[in-house]
Length: 309
Image (cartoon, rainbow, N blue to C red):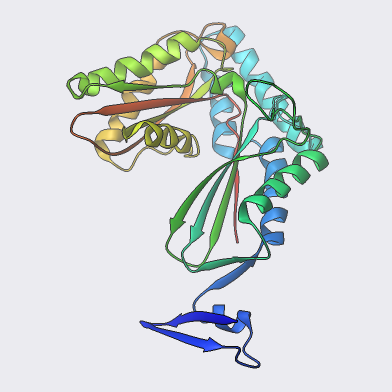
């Protein structure tokens, strides 16, 4: 059996060296993470994400309950806060639609996953988490035949290779009341920023009460069709009180939040000021001939939880 490992710029080769274990070799530069650790982490994150609303969203709902101009809206927002508190205290799902598990894996290039398949480890964690957590299983094995898999797998997994020797896991259960209100549009470069603004406002207005407002609007601009969609999904992970670090994009987020909230859809679509808690925008370079833009709608419980191994 022949094995290889690297030390600096020198690659070494040996054949059956006695007493030199895989761990010793990979330990030179590679951190080992066993798949059992990954499954355990995903299992816990599935439950945490479905039980505990993130503090930024909870604070936004509380502020809305105090400041919403609509009396009905204030009552509804207070009920959403109460619902979140009960879910966290009693360890039950914050929403009956516990979503399809969307998992983001940021894996350091100096990490070596051992013991089996990373993808299988993630799905095992989802399987256990949704079972132990008494979370609704909503995944069908075929989008056309519609037979439930019975354990909410497979998850949708997005991998990203990063520097370092850690593995970050983010579980973002996505309900389809909001997911169904999402979309991608391939704008022309000449449509410019005004075309992007019109697309965002149109999508939110068309969605109305369906995504359970107040919503979080995730927007991806640039790249290709699929890159824009992933950017929009990842934008939902950013706290609602944090603006894009790019000054111009941050201003665009603030402008669009104001425009969206002037639509008057309000909490639960029953009218009012708070239609959206945030418009989060992420951008990426694109082709000279294109302007892809995607919008991923997040409901009032845009759930996510993360862990670093």
